[in-house]
Image 1: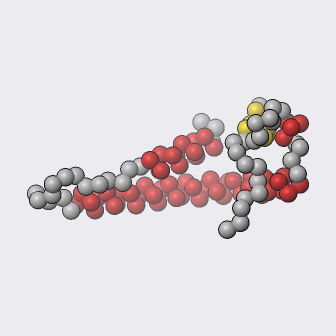
Image 2: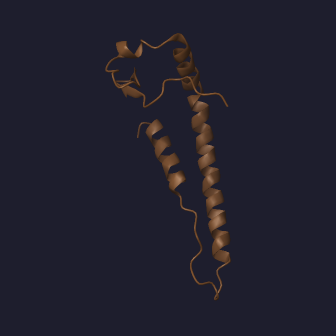
Image 3: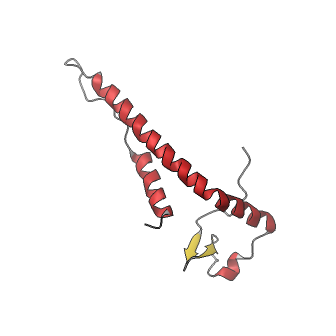
Length: 107
């Protein structure tokens, strides 16, 4: 897998305008000072964002079902001889995915 060439770090949007990701970026003029390869990589990433969003939604749904199934299986193995509760998978990753999707929707 090749290394990503798009702008690293947090991107910022101010008043609906892309501002940039570098700490010194404070306005749209600073954000325009990226090289052609970086700008192209950013454009490709942004153009694929809707498909990535849909895929992440799908992955979150699958992950929820899988975690639920695994936890149900672990509970079914609990018997009167079982000394403790099973080690459940938590939903932290799923929660983080849902938070990211929420942020992407501007919520």
